[in-house]
Image 1 (spheres, rainbow, N blue to C red):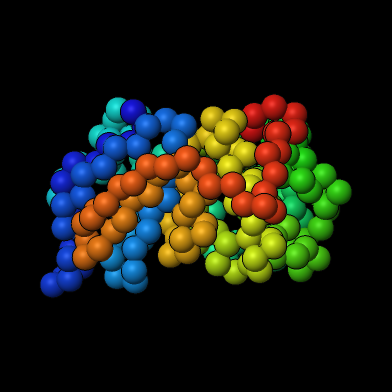
Image 2 (cartoon, rainbow, N blue to C red):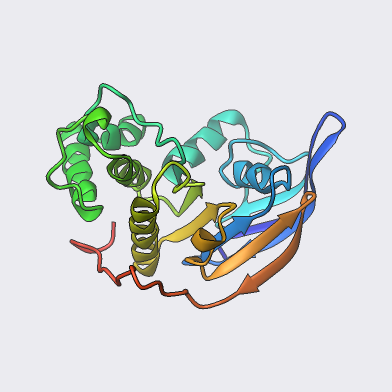
Length: 239
């Protein structure tokens, strides 16, 4: 078991964002979290990512209860055990693709030569071996998101949390990014995606449906193949 939450609640003053969420996510799963605006899905993701703490309830990550840890311990978990991917990419504008991917490894204390080599290898895995020295302004939106995914993989996280990762992309680039997530998951990487898009959610093997701060459904299904999707293999092994 990678993740287990028990009766999570989260209140912001008089507003209750989560109203008792219990969920289990196995290592190696690909899970989509869906729900309308205000349903609690982003709050749930923030707690899973150790960005926020629940008001009550428990959160176990790899068997350890983490919600009650201090800020320093939570920061260490975010840096070393969780990879984040955002809709807006969040890349450093003046840094090259390699330098952006290196950033989490700098905070983790990885030696310069080792982090540069790993950054190049990860960019090759996501299909950007010919864009190592390019800054974000020289890359398309889909390429920027690939850099962001490579950065999320930098410290060999236990899981990837992606918040609307195709929201800023056109349909073609969005399909390519979701196929990349699928490929990484098939290599063993636990992946959780927050989305309002049913097409994106169908790439996952299981969907958690949120409404009014609670899980109102959790349906499992096989991957839905699309005519534009391929079954790519990781280049150079698992990240």
